Amino acid sequence: MMDWTTYFDSVIDSTTLLIAVLGISGVLILRDLENRWRWFSVVFFSDMVLKTSASMISRFSAVYWHNVPLQTAFDFLATLFSSTIIPLLTLYILHCCSQEPRKSFLWKLILILWGLSVAAAVGDLLTRTLFAVPTQDSTKHKRWLILVYLLFTAISMIVCLVAVICRRKQLSKPQFILILVYLLAPVSVMLLAMELMLLVDQGTRYIKQKEEIADQKVRLAVLQMRPHFIYNTMTSIYYLIKQDTPKAQQVTLDFTNYLRKNFTAIAKEGTIPFTEELEHTRAYLAVEQVRFKGKLFVEFDTPYTSFRLPPLILQPIVENAVKHGVDPDLDPLTIHIQTREVKNGVEITVADTGPGFGAKDNDEPHIALWNIRERLEMMCKGKMEIAPRDGGGTVVTVFIPQARR
Image (cartoon, rainbow, N blue to C red; front, side):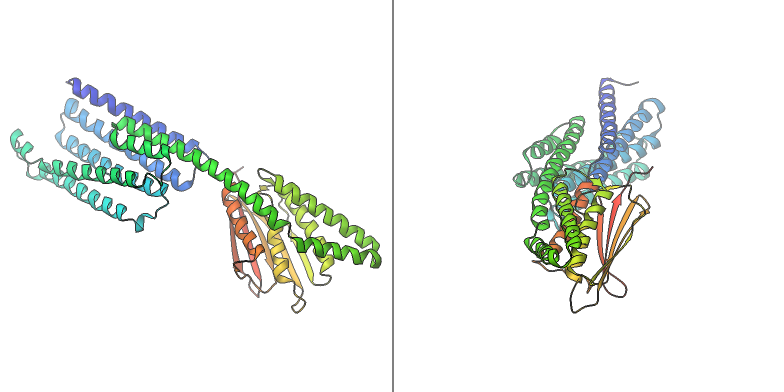
């Protein structure tokens, strides 16, 4: 039969279990959550579910089932799962401070203390199961190892508390307050604090992401409107007016279309249809093929166009290939643009026969490529890879994730 303390513990465990399950549900519902933070949150709340469930089974085994081996086993599991909470919190603190755990003294110290507490818990289990005699006094006498476990756990919490205070300037005010609440409050409030940490972290990331995208757009506007390209195009049109008036008119139309697409892309807030990006790229290439007559050839193999992507992805990649590949002293440059459906997304490939890719610190088109990689990651979780092409040249591959249909 349960006394009032057992009832109280059961209510606390039930509340904790409910909050932990809600925490897991919330993490899975938040679609824009960073993968690393998503998995950390799932592991943390799952650990609390397992710890609380083991604690409740142990209590029921003692009160209703009178099954000592079962009670001992689940009591040990509850202790084991409980011991992982401080290491998980330490990982969260280091993540918030942008510190690498493998290089952190704090992380190494917490792991040592965690190992010692687990060893004490295992020792307590062995003492109770192998050496305890069936007398109440003897069993109590041999549970001194659980005090060692509690001692190392308390030291871990103190170390974690000191670490948080020392890093308070690296943490946002909400993060600092919530971690303190987490360390000093009861278990249920601790879990609520962790869920609030999750929401605060997600909100902070969202605001930061918006600021970064806005900053990227400003940089893109500068990179995409380089004066030399405009000057060279206008000069080409000037000479074509006398030499070939219809072609001059066509180049003027293509250049106008390119500028219009460029300004429209810069003003876009989200993703755009690939057909718009492809039209933008064709307008750019039409202008460049007039400028580099006989030195630039383009092949399109784009059967799949029914997808969206961030603006200014394909065109800057192609422009980079043209700038670094067209050379009077080299063979004509051929650019092959291809799209195809792959598992879980779409793959865009831009292959050229130029001299090959080489990173240059102060070269704007190369800066633009790294800019593209950052925007792909931020705006659609996409990826970009640059590799040498067999036979010479460069292959740039862009992967755009797509929802399964």
